[in-house]
Length: 115
Length: 155
Image (cartoon, rainbow over all chains, first blue to last red):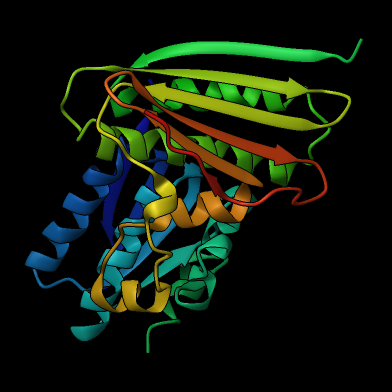
């Protein structure tokens, strides 16, 4: 079975880094959803999500970000994605999400992307 | 004789098996002349179709199997997948195309898989034979669309 993992770290006082690795599909998306909902429940709405280790994403995985970005932005935060693989970026493109999400090359760049 | 690659797998109604489906599709499309980006999209479309059947025809927790048949015409660079299940009737062609802007605003996700399938595959044909099974046939041709989304219900 594919490995899927999420690691959460504080970047600064206001921003949390999520490192995701593995397949983000209809089998694994709920774990990410739970993680993000947990952060929202703690009042953390500024999320940098490093997806460089995500080998594959389907609409179920992308749907987690779609479901979360409005709530993050409405609470003064955002979801900034870092370094997607070409395969994952193509899925975001197909769904039109590259127009919606800020996508950065590095975590440092992502930190500076919050408005 | 034109070279044909044919694979068939049967999986239970469990998203745990999606990775196995993708691996099998990859093994087939890797033998084609589809560019890597298109091959990856085909894998995605099959994943989305199988996921939809699990969510709608089998409603997640019903017991049942999905038969997935893959045929690659190597010379014509034509890929065909047929997915059969005995769950509830579910025609992806009946689903409305999502308004992505509205989806994002409201945090909705349904319909995204079908949206992707329609963008990727050239033909999506669903048939239902009452009391027997659902059959979803999807085709991808090299170099673009040759067919349109069609519907064919029988039984």
